[in-house]
Image (cartoon, rainbow, N blue to C red):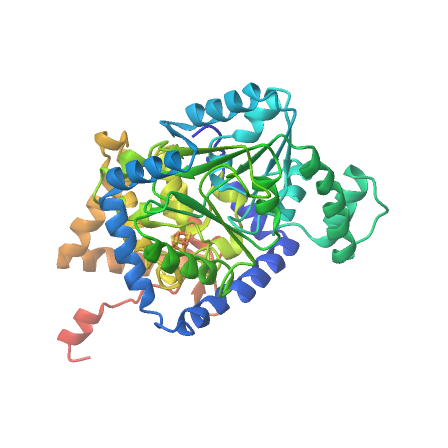
Amino acid sequence: MSEIFVGDYTNEAKRAIGNPVLQRALADLQNRFGRGTAQAYRNLPEGPDLRLKAHEIRENAIANLDVLLETLADNVRANGGQVFFARDAAAAARYCLETARRHQVQTAVKGKSMVSEEIGLNSALIGAGIDVAETDLGEYIIQLAGERPSHIIAPAIHKTRTDIGRLFSDKIKIDYTDDPPTLTRAARKALRQKFLAADIGFSGCNIACAETGHIATVSNEGNIRMSTTMPRVHVAIMGMERVAARLEDHDILLRLLCRGAAAQNMGTYVSYVGGPRQAGQVDGPEEFHLVILDNGRSRILADEQFREMLCCIRCAACLNVCPVYGKIGGHAYGHPYSGPVGAVVMPLLAGINAAGDLCQGETLCGACQDACPINIDIPRMLLALRAKLAEGDPGWGVSPAGGGEKLFYRMWSWMIRSRGVYDFFLRLAAVGQTVLPAQNGMIRRLPPPMNGWTKARDLPPVAGESFMRRWKKGL
Ligand code: SF4
């Protein structure tokens, strides 16, 4: 992981909650995409149970990943492509850079790819003096603004059209307007020059197919197709888990991916790429490279508790229904994966202690699993991460929670298991609470260290007599 910004989760979350423009944008996103997904699954000819089949397909692929990746690599090579297995982010970025240097690349274009964010590709290329243009409209906006994506598939969701109008006026020197079609036309005109000038195109990979040796990319703007067919060289980067065994499986995953991502039956542009341009073909690159990235995934694969996370196809459906993402947006999670998927993946990739806030912040409501096209049990893995944070795990390099917290919970456990002690503390609390500020029968403020509970909510008072005592007295 080359670039992460986790560590300021609480402050970033507070900032997001206090931003009314962002709150409206997030509510709109979740209303548009989140609600449509369930209906899109119901409309499938096979019904929503196709998600269970997809889960089985992904679990089988993950269980046979070594064989599938070798088969994929052999088939890509047989099609004339080149394959590089990158152990970590630095190795992947280095390979991309060396390929660009070998071709004396001056200008690069990129289709939206979260894995390229994961390896810090833009910084590496720009550091080497190569001009890189993001070509997805949302990513283009984010790049002009010098920001990070805040959603896996809608990276500029936090920007209003007024923001974008001002940005375009400042950066690409057009007259200010907040009219979306005019802004889109301006972006298209600017990007057209980039496509024509680019020597190399980078893309991600939505799902690769081992049987045929191709990768598939999905977009609604056609920009990925332009990025991968116009330049002389195409480099695709994929996380090593994104492979399906057979074309039949690939088809099911692709259909579910589009429904999960944007409640669409299919993305507008779906491209299958399996190698360089063949004799007689009118377009396509002269060279095709596939970079298969590990970067911590082997470690996840080796852990039975978390292996299921590798089934993820990064559709973002879980973000679109998550009550936490819906309030704090993507930036609070750190970079690059956010929402429920980020709350599991980021701690596993960046360190469980370092990114521990992310899994602690989720509500465990289960909406993510219901929305997931692969039916991944995210709540189970969130709990497993929390258990590691509480107990520690040398295997994952996790140091356990502070002694104070542990002591508190030990005492709590002892108290609630000892009837007499519990009743004693209950009576003590009933007397103690009479000096606390109250309104309408609710406690307004608790003293430190419990004051966090009442910062945003009132607390019902403790009953003067426990249910058990009343029961004994015959209620
Ligand atoms: S966990 Fe499921 S819903 Fe979330 S991004 Fe992955 S596949 Fe999509």
